[in-house]
Image 1: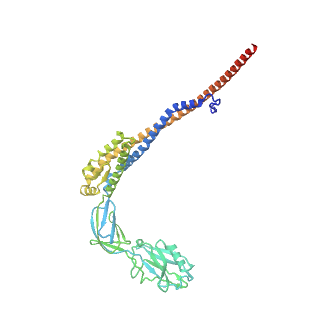
Image 2 (image 1 turned 180 degrees about the vertical axis):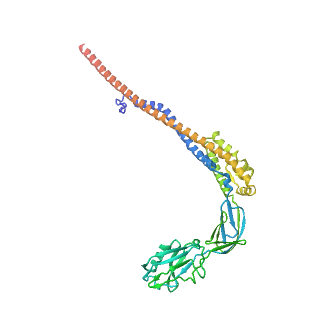
Image 3 (image 1 turned 120 degrees about the horizontal axis):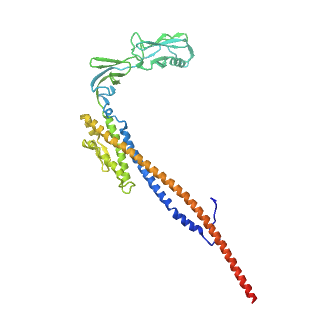
Length: 440
């Protein structure tokens, strides 16, 4: 029966346990060899995974690359960024514009003529209406009647008109007054003038029985649009941002003054791509060097060293135009100044070089990534087989040990019984001899 316990050398006459241990040690050698092989396979797996990841990263760099997109970017430079800045899209032609900023946009800020000497005084107010002139239409905001303090009236206005008008409290040194200002100057093209304002009361509030009015003759700040001039053309904006003065070119004005905007090709995406290429290329080369170095696990294995050789053969144009420098270990260093120089002098040539790089390095990296993944799968398959085989041998060895212990236990029992029989026979012979001697 499996699982039985057999006690070795109970009689002290036959130490069969040491014999079985020796047999088991000899028969476990194949399992030990499988264990060693499994460790070697696992070491290869671990080492290969780093290279597989590095090659995969290099392949992904080219996966969705559109070389033409790298050359479509534009940039805008302002000769005086304290006066204005500019942003562009790829649709803008390469141009130079002289701009003059004559006015900056600002929000209208008004206060009431009336006020309170005590900010915490109790007040009540009737229902009233505030208007907001967008320049193309009039918006009306109704404030319900209520009571409380001046701050409560402020909250009531903000709850009603807060998306266009901001109410707050202004202290002029003697009285606390209601202050109304535009939330966003871009919401209105209207400007403050002697006859009209952006913000007004269409129905004035009556507070504690007194009519409150806005001081439109002396606003704290007048609503004003921003103006820029390009040649004889004057452009107006309700905010300090001018969208699409040329399709795709927008300007943010900051101060009154003059500045020159220059729109030109932007090759920063090209430089970014090449920086990423060098980084990922070096990642592959570093992994190859690590795996094939002296005493490394893949030393002398051309399937690994060949990756470095093949990749280096695909960089002739990069070397020919000094776009990269190669180091002693085979890794690369990008020559940014040479890239910018070629981009400015011959962008089509640089475009051709990157297209060739995609077709050669990109395709090779994809194929190699697939091959390395297959190699990794083969190693995993081998490891699974080794582990399964080792488990089978271990089970066989356990059954063999069980059988040997049973057989040797029986042998010991037989030997013990034989020894007992021999002892009885010896005793019988002695007794018989004694009996015969007694008859004489």
